Amino acid sequence: MRAFLAHKAHQVAGIREEFETMDPNLSTPVIVDLGKTKRKKIKQLREGRGKLLGDVEDAMREVTMSMGERAEGKELVPVVLVYRKKAKKRRRGGFLPFF
Image (cartoon, rainbow, N blue to C red):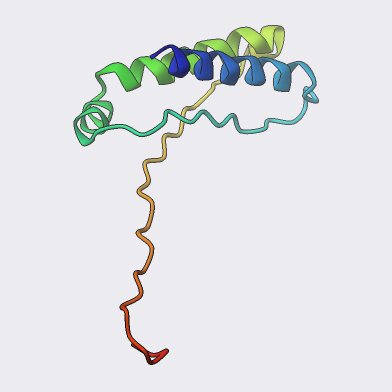
């Protein structure tokens, strides 16, 4: 759990540094990796509740605070992507290359 929290702190620090050096006329996306999660937590996020929603809200709050005055008059919209890694194809143990 401590390693996870340290990872989150590192992500937030990276967000803060990115916005401090960003051109005020550009809007770059902020990517926050929420890590590997269970289906139940993803379902709760889709329903608008749960721990993952709190993580997204924390990231949005941190971005808004780091932008300072540049956040005035802007509406930040969170976009959450859920993906699953594609399984690698397993080779069958044959002597011929096409098996």
